[in-house]
Length: 612
Image (tube, rainbow, N blue to C red):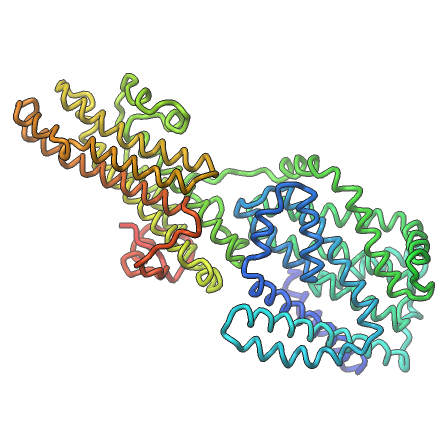
């Protein structure tokens, strides 16, 4: 109900303000232009970085202090804590970073965003920035129209800065014009009541504009024009700081439980910091006065003093809460219980990762690994082996030689519930990815889709193999038992090697090359290649029907092994590996679409990959 009436209420309020006050119209236009500039700036950094920020997030978050520093630096450069928050939530949802590292980044972003107030108070109000805005807009729009991605990114950044400067100019001029008609400072509320009232106003303004940066610029320009008192401005800044958590909360709604935990940490930090600032506002104000004297800020330069206040109380919150991060992680993990989805349901695919190409790619990679884990269990059970034991470091031959308790599993059910449905979700997700993800990671996504197909094919082949294997593993014919046990050993060896590659991230490319040796060994042990089958037939050790079964099943084993090894290369090969001579097109064909529909996928998708 609130959502339905909020937007019309805002429109009616703005319309009334435009009607009664031309100055209000100028201020509102300044805010709108500023917010538009923020959108351009965020879009520019998304395009221009080309994954630089995402790569930094992956490589510099192994320590809490590194995460915190990255949050400060990245937000200072991009002037958008919202973008940093969204990327952090995306990477957390995709499993690229841990919760503690994500919390460090968010805390750092809170401190980094305070630099925006310094820029506006120290530069934007003391220089005619509209003169800089015009050429930035001209050059920015020209570059945005280019097709080269880096140039387009620079264009968005320049145009964004131009709109930011222009918005600040309009807000400044609007508040200056108010002096001739209305003095808003007359409505100042002193004492605790004013502190609480203006904190709520700052919070509401930030929730409506979805940008604490815009709210702070509005506060600073109003303060510089003496339209609000310094004390009320402090309260507004506190409210803006609390209100900025709404952006993170909204971003976490489509995220998994990890994203929700991060939004919870953001909320706790800003609320606690805001409460501390309210309770000790007098002490913080005194600290601002003392620091201002040390650094040479004039006693009546309230705009710069407000920026200093914003930095000091955020820094105080960080010093208070950052050391408690391990306990905060434990609390959030208990508060937001992770309900493990069914094995057939995606664990990493969600809307929160779709807009960040690197996060989307890693989510698909992790989900493909999940699909392989499901297939691993199915194949191991079909071979009458323990999946847990096969994942261990025990020698494979010892596992295969253990006494057999042959059990037939329902392969149709296993395939449909553990493989086919998840496979459908993965390829449907790839089909829904935005063009930016497809453009920057086309080869990797194509390779992962092929890996999913290989997994599905391997499971379908093991279904055909299981029928004869269950029969001949307990056959009274020693030779048939021996040959089918050898087939089990071959597939178990391949599975064991692949698990070893997944377990050890270092030297993966070298281990992948070692799979060639595994394939060579399978070829040498093939009963058709080494003449074993011919000898058994000539000695009449097996019947012709047994021989045909062995021939067919040997082919199945070869196909399964090849599919599994191809899958391993698709998932674990480094991004530098290229697929030469292949059409790297992730578009889905008609057969693929028809099969996804039949799988009953609940997600809407225009393109889907085929599962017969």
